[in-house]
Length: 313
Length: 298
Image 1 (cartoon, rainbow over the protein chains, first blue to last red):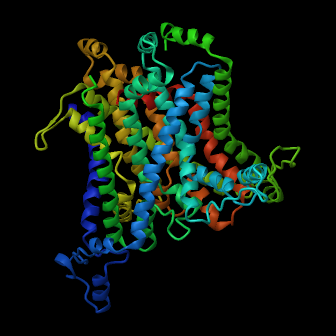
Image 2 (tube, each protein chain N blue to C red; image 1 turned 45 degrees about the vertical axis):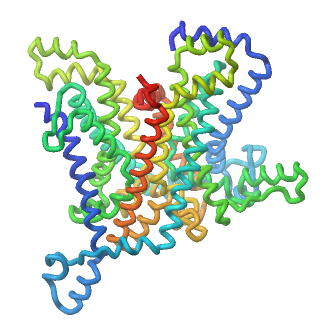
Image 3 (cartoon, rainbow over the protein chains, first blue to last red; image 1 turned 90 degrees about the vertical axis):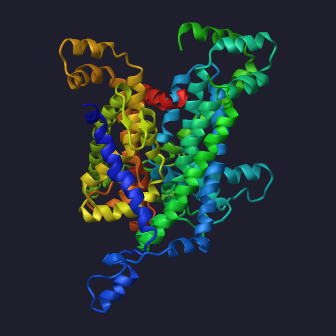
């Protein structure tokens, strides 16, 4: 009887998650391509129809995909970009989220409305957020309210032409624009979860600290931050793992460019698999991404356990 | 959030100096502006003439520019077939996967909460199984691109509702199981037991006693599943090519097919975003509960 409850979930995960995972590991060691592997196509051209390749399955076993990883410059820059998105993105989102949560934790009129407003960006499809971002990061002050503002702001500072930022055309600025779009969507998420964590802290603790003469900063650093540590770790881990998957914002805003300055790993894998049809190589890169994700999560959990160091009950 | 807990805050509020209150409101209003202004900009852009978009920026309707309904009329007029089809595709695939995720997630969550499992060969008990299930949620979807394309081609699932529903259900199940297990753990077993004493089967007790009681958890799971599937881009792009294309893919594709017509994209974007936001805001308390369920206990 008890199996009935668990089986549907397990069957779906085994067939659509575990099996594809193992299968793509296998594919990553073959020269499989869309329309057959090189060896199969050569054989077909020569008139041989079956019995080609490894066990006659029509493809060759090879470790070439993994050798190719080492000197693929575009791959290296996509790894670098993805790591930037993850580490810079998570750090910014967490710090601003924590600051906002601290502010919202003060009692004020209209807090519930603010909470509702904060839910809005994260319910927006990232594709839409990215298009909106594109309107704002247009460098032409005739079209973009942000460029308009920066120009006037710069003039106010005494610059003759105002400030103009080449958001999507400059290799240094383009990743920043993408980071800002992602941050706009997800800082409210950080804020709401950290706020929930803060509101779960009983007031007696604060009262006791205040009676002992602690000031606001001490209370924040010695009480709020340590108590929020577990929830902070969780939320940082969740966001970090989510940013590893980034593709939609990049596709819509820059398409990976200029050059490959903003291309993410997921986008590169997608292009290798669907635009170029290199199934074997795409799978090998996907495994690089998976290993990066696993390393990130493991190091993070280990660090978290050490930081929490027996403080948790 | 009961009365007793709020009292010290209220006391502190009366002591707060004016400059602190001013700073507090300034920060709150500034950030609300950051969050809301892009939505305002989308809404106004969708009723601007093209010339008002490129020769602006024009901020306030009727003062800076004359709003026109043309782009909305186009979306529901000439483009009606396309708009309806993509909207329906999003709706069907999101709703279908939501229903499946809620059912399957509730069943597995209940199982993990009430029975003892032991997978001998792996040496896994309930906690290991639950951890394995949630860990699937965090696998990078990129790793599924190649196998899914091959699998879906083999089973002729490309460009079908069934294919999208299946994929989204797979992505939503881990989270659904996690939330529902958490929820059932907090639900006392007495009620089910008394129902079973009265002769109900385990399944009957689950359907008639447990599920109605767990409505808040089910709603939270449903919202999250729906929003995820509604907003998903990568798999929708990869597994559809005409009939089943969803709203996000349609929006992302505007870039190539029609040049950048910001006014039309804005209308389309609002069309994709507003329904979800309305659902979300109506069911806001369930979302907050669901968000914090896993994390706060973390």
